[in-house]
Length: 242
Image 1 (tube, rainbow, N blue to C red):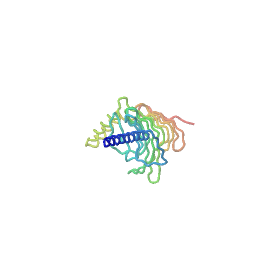
Image 2: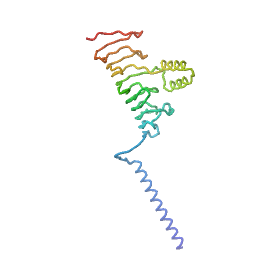
Image 3: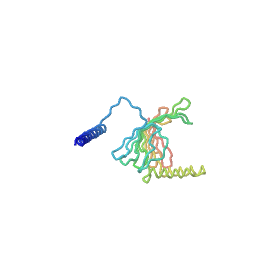
Image 4: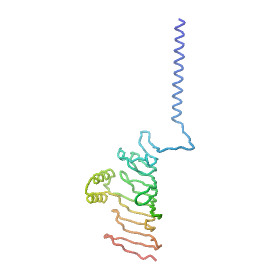
């Protein structure tokens, strides 16, 4: 009887101990999940912001790990993209971003920053940008606001698939012609630019829905104020500014 009582006591104590450990572990884990951490400094290559269901909403990343882009539930193929922020809408589609870079190219060093907002299921339609090219110690720059649009039936995935097929054309002239046709039919149309051009003019530049220039109100490189309009043939009409 004494041996049996000892066993019962041991099992009772053991069960109590395990219960305390499990409850403590549960409470500790719950507390860690709810806890807000504070840091003075942190080094990180990429941060993903997601919803409770896993839908991605924002990525802050260096260029090596930058998100390639996403639409209709699929990530695009890995591609080189600058460091910065990429935004995603409630459906998980890319919808804009803030990017910046400085890069050496065969045409000189390029440097700049861009904040963009995309059209639903398509590319950027509103952009605030600063673009600079440094060549032989000289800087050419374009800074301002761009408003763009796309044809009603345009879809970025469809356009990318068509361009990918066009790249397979072996004849260089035919390939270039096909690519230009795709952009003419489905590509971006610049409707408005407000800012400084690479030609050192400052002003407002307006186009029609097809991206054809229609009016320019600007100050040229010599400081002369100008107003110009374009007819359907692309011919320029100057208005005298006193």
